[in-house]
Structure formats: C-alpha cells, structure tokens
Amino acid sequence: MTTSLPQRVLPEITGLLNAYRDPAILLDRDYRIVTANHAYREVYGEGLPLQHRRCYEVSHGYGVPCDQAGEDCPLKGSLETGGAQRVLHIHHTPAGQEHVDVETHPVRDEAGEIAYFLEVLRHVRSASPQSRGEGLVGRSPAFNRMLAMVERVAPTEAAVLLQGESGTGKELVAKALHDDSARARGPFVPVECSGLTESLFESELFGHEKGAFTGAHYRKTGLVEAARGGTLFLDEVGDIPLPLQVKLLRLLETRTFRPVGSVEPRQADFRLVCASHRDLAAMVADGRFREDLYYRLSTFPIHLPALRERPEDLPLLARTLLQRSAQGAGKRLTDAALEHLRRHAFPGNVRELRNVLERAAILADDGEIGPGHLLGLEAEPHPESAGPAHPLPAAILPLRRMANRYLVWAEANAGDMDRAELAERLGMSERTLYRRLREAHAEAG
Image (cartoon, rainbow, N blue to C red; front, side, top):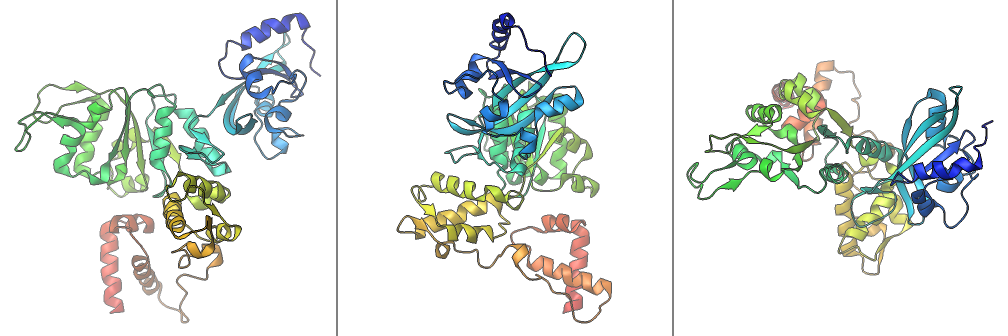
C-alpha cells in the first residue's frame, strides 16, 4: 500500500501541478487521485471532489482499470517498466468524448520504490471520436493507432511519410500534423506531385524570375518559398519521375533552392510531409524510386488505415460526411441503409463513402436515406459475403497458363489503376507486366 502524503504538503504539490497548462494529476498505486491541478478540475471535476476517486472512474466512467476494459493503461505500463508511458485514450468530458494523449511518469520514494504517478493529459485538437464539422473523425483501434503516431511526431521537425490507399484522407492527416506543430501559424502548402511535368517542376516548386523563359512576363513565387515558416505537403510523391527526384533530393539535402532564371540560391524553411498510395519501398527495389530520397522522406512513416480496417468507424463517418455535405445536412441513414453500407468493401475508402452519401442525399426527399438511395453498391459486395471473384478451372492447367489467366483477369478488374500501380500490386516491374500480358493475350487469342 502507498503511504499517504501529509496533508500539509498537498498545497505545494498542487501548486507544482498548476505549472502545467494541460490537465495533470498525482495518483497513488491504487489509481486514486491524490491531488489535481486547476485544468484537470475544470475539465473533469464537474463541481465534485476529486481526491480519493479513481482516475478511470472520472475520465472513462469505468468500474475497472483501463486494461481490464480493453484499453492500454499507462499507469500499469509504468508499474511494469518503471519508466514513463504514453497512450492515446478516449475520455469523457463536459464537451463529450475526446481523444486524449495520456502521459504517466512514476514518482519514487526515498527507498527508490514507485510510490506515486504524475499523469498529464493533452487533449487532441485535430481529431474527434464524435461527429463534427471538420478535421479527422474516428474512434476505432486502427484510427487511434494512427492518431497516436500523429500526436507523437507532430511537435517535431521530422519528415513524415503518410502511406495508405487512395481515399484514406492523407491531406487531412497532413493538415493535422501541421496544426499540431510549432509551425501551425505558418502556411500549409499542398503540392499535387502527379500533375508536375518535368517542364513545370522547377518553375512550380522553385518559382521563376521575370524573363527566365518565353512567356515568363512576371516573377513567380514557387511553392517552396510559399511554404516558408510552415509545412510543405507533397501529395503522391511516388509519382515524381526519376529525373526530377534528384532535384527534390538536392533541395532536402542543402535546404536551398534557386528560382529559374536566378543565380542566387535562397534558403528554404519548411517542415516536410509526404504522402503516397504506392509502396515506395517496392519501387526502390524495382529501381523506380531513388533509395537515398526514400530514406530522406520516410524518417517517420505512418500507415493510414483503409476503411475496411476500421469498420467500427463507418456509422460515425457516415453521420459526419452527411453533416458536412450541403445536400446531406439534416438527413439521416436508416438502420437498413447503414447495414447495406457495412456489406460494401469500399475500395475507394472514405472518398467513395462520401460520394455514395452525397448521391443518396440528393435522391432522398423525406429526410431519411434508405438502401434504395445507395446507388452503385450492389455490384461490389464485401469480399467476405461474395463468392470467388475468379473461380479456379475445372481441369488442372500448367501453372504458367493459370498465372496468365490471372493476369488477364487482374487487368480487366483493375478499375482506374494505371499500369504502374497494377504492376506494383502484382509485385513485378511495369516492363515485366507488359511482357507477361502480351504473352497472356497471345495465348488467349
């Protein structure tokens, strides 16, 4: 059992806790609150005494510690490791449920034994487990793991690589990284790399001087300069052609750039966040992406979960997307419509869900969205409920012929994937895919 602190020292400890702007408490080994700072009392106190109440009762409404209710418990982690622990939780507050980054530090007695714990709680501003008008929304384990990584790296200057399928919200996450950083008052400058041709790359990124080339009638500020003091977000960085990758690498290594037509180098000042739906590591192995650039970009990689990895978030996302839509405001999904959505695979992720709901909201006249309003879902059932998409042949075939049949099927079912992305999904180079498809079509025809 923990020895109780003398009452006369509690005001001094509370005064120390008040040095934290975030909510902070001192806990004993039995999860009881010894004292709390003003910020904690304001958020969690609800006008009631906090001393001797257990932390999980106050912040979660649980009757047992967090680790017995399906969450990681930082206090238990500190007891086991003897060091600080940090986890992302969802707490109950007067404003409703909120994501909270909880950090626990053990406090030792004169004998060196852990007697108390200092717990500091930082409320996440860039995301919510409730439906809201803007920002990131989610509460599933996969979403919370991603958000915990965002909260870890946001205050630093480390380069971040966001990796995930198309439609998973990479720009929203990049903006959250910016908003939670020391550069939040600076500009957030997104760059769509897939639209940058070789002739435009330097002019768009670095700018140009008046008269630098035919048609340059005025000086243009480049996006690198526009991001000064803020964040430069390179979206779909995997689409940058190899000849241009070396120019980006030089910018990152020297932190200088030179506008087209200028001889004077200029200092760059930005925090770099990149994103790609492609497997950059596989592209490096295949010779389609520079290895040295890859390591520059991927100091801190973050996986963005696909919608199928966070099925618990589907109802919350659907409500939020309807709320954000001009057509969907005030409309609701019926239980049958929500179940219909759950049976769909959503290969286009949240972007596809948004489009489906916007169409449905336009079609729904009475304020309720039913299954009949959810157009375009019938043809793509969830994989778990569907039959085999490419049935095996009745006869035994040579493996090469079966592989060729699969390649033809994959090409026909690639949707809006280009040849390079299809090759990446199949684990081969684009040149090999082209050769194998030519062989497969010749065999079939």
